[in-house]
Image 1: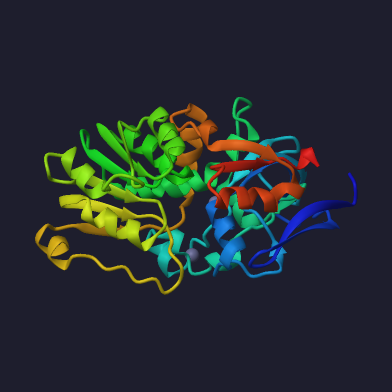
Image 2: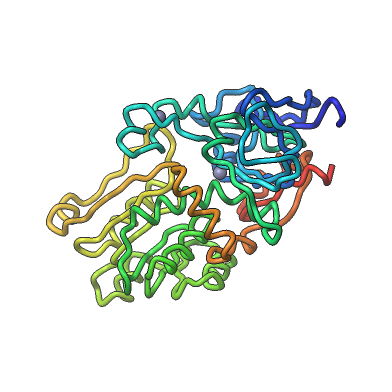
Length: 348
Ligand SMILES: [Zn+2]
Ligand SMILES: [Zn+2]
């Protein structure tokens, strides 16, 4: 093995650097993997453009990956050299106030339990992730597909919160990777109709390909009126917001029928205030739910949905790039030219 490797570092908003750094060595309980693919993510894009509260530069960059185990520390159980694996980007402590209450996604120690640096040739996986949130993957799953385990685990937690009943009409706002995964999960949960609300017609065509029964572009249509028109004036039974603006949060609330559940998936910039019609929320018994991150259980569920093909992520992989193209790739994401890109270190 060479002694050094290439890895992308985040130095602050608008600044990335490809550095030559030592290849990590595994301490007790850790493994080192050769990254097969790392996928670009909206969270990385947010951090790159405006900084992010979870990102403390300078730091290794990237958090979605799949690859091959190349070295194991003492005491690692269940994995061996050569295993194809993927993992979530964090694992909870299991012992804090929120972990004890069944909310590991809100673990008080989450910030120190993330693993960054997947835009690199090699990645060290810390012991707490190896033991709780790393999984082997079958040969038929490509590294790029398996790297979706983390964003899909977030989508699974969201769909669990949505409480979809058989026969429901579900409106999903946002046709990025999250929205496109949610469409498939909503169908898997028994929704009879999924209405995809987005902007770009190209993405809405992918939404239709992945199971959306109706697509609405907010570029030329009043989406709230359109959802009402499709539901005898009631509004959707369940609404999921995965588009990422105060306007779409409001829109989500407005297109919900009485007694609907609205799940607000996307994070907005710190300090953002969103207003809603209190009369609608109160008298119509609207349930508004925030959702954040994933749990070890939803990570497992995400893996099974990928393995079975019940969630098809291939249409969301818009291309393959090398480590030196990460910055350009994020800019292409920002211009909505691509949904997600697979970063393949072997291309360098
Ligand atoms: Zn991500
Ligand atoms: Zn905890």
